[in-house]
Length: 120
Image (cartoon, rainbow, N blue to C red; front, side, top):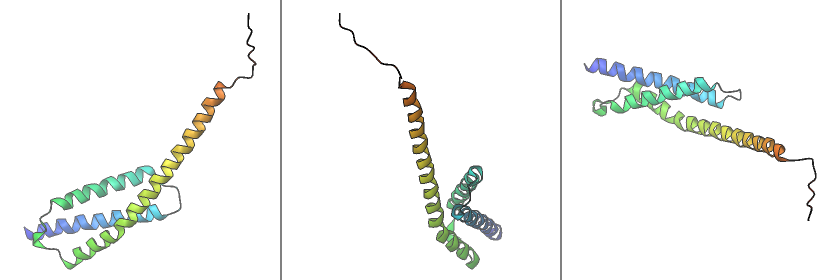
């Protein structure tokens, strides 16, 4: 039973490490991001973290699991910083789009005619 439990913990930590390191690479690369891929990786990462929260940690971790957990914890700020950059870029694009949209709307209200106010 403990053997099976350890295998599950190791498998979850290994997958979490792979996803986290993949996210770090994607978020730090200067190329265009694939939104669906990043979203899928973030969702899978969240699910794995939730699974890890359900484990009974009183049995302890092996040295290999401890090393994986340390590496994941080390990469976590990189993921958060990369996601923050992506969020800021999206917000900036949204502001630019909103300004563009407003300029288009304002052009519709401009008239080329002259209004003469006649008093009777």
